[in-house]
Amino acid sequence: MQAEDGRLSTTALARKLDIPAQQLFVTLRDYGWIRRVGEGWALTPKGEFEGGDYRHSQRYGRYIVWPETLTEHPLLAAIESNQRITSPGIGRYYSALSSQQINRVLAELGLQQRTLIGWELTARGRELGGQQEIGSKSGALYTTWPHDIVDNPLIHRELAGFSPVVSAPSADTTEPDLFQEGGGPAMDLAGIDGHKLTSSLQMRVCNWLYLAQLAHAHRRALPCAETIYADFYLPESCVYIDCWESDLPAGELKDRLRKRDLYREMELRNLQIDAEDEDRLDDVLGGALLEYGMRF
Image (cartoon, rainbow, N blue to C red; front, side):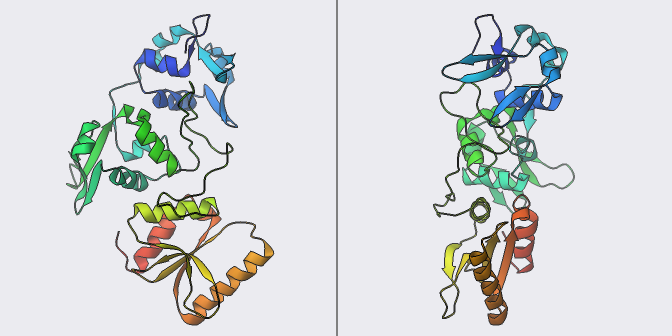
């Protein structure tokens, strides 16, 4: 969008610079020109010094505009639009997802597939600009992508769906909410596999299991006379998983403590995932399953 005085929105400035919009948002954030405030972006003193200002429209609300002369700014002009990125690079835009999770999402979309020697590009991935690479030392396969893949609506929608801290941009917004760090509308607490869940932690665990291609049941009854359910159950390895959110109500805490006693009494394999584990499931959940002999 171009304002009446010729200033450019951040998205319009990205088009002028011929770089992906998400790349510019991240760059301006890293330079300290903008910062996240609630559900939107705000200028910093440095951004104001560089000519940033605000405009308001009935359709888009308040948004940031920049002087068109910034297209000649050495810091912005130096951005390479043709730079290729790997899964860790994509993770810069989706900080709640590890590179391993991003690789699994790309595989779930059919863009690559896991092999014994790494990630192999598919024909579908090649259509989106993917290239097959081989590690010079390890010989492992991996894929690289054009930087503008982060602006691909499908890729953004799917990665955002696996990451509750990122919301998908609306089709009729000029400044998409690309890097939400909290707040915003309530999430639809459903796993990508359709499981109806009751917390963000459950959704993260459910999606992690789905991407790891591990068959799992939600709310599976324990094999006992009492009617008690585990949050998740992995039939392949007979592992029960429970998500312990912070600040559990007294009644629910009592039930979960009873369930923990039953696991011990019946010698059932079980894992407890705590609220602080939400952003490190690869280490906590993945590591625990490996100890149980699972391979994924």
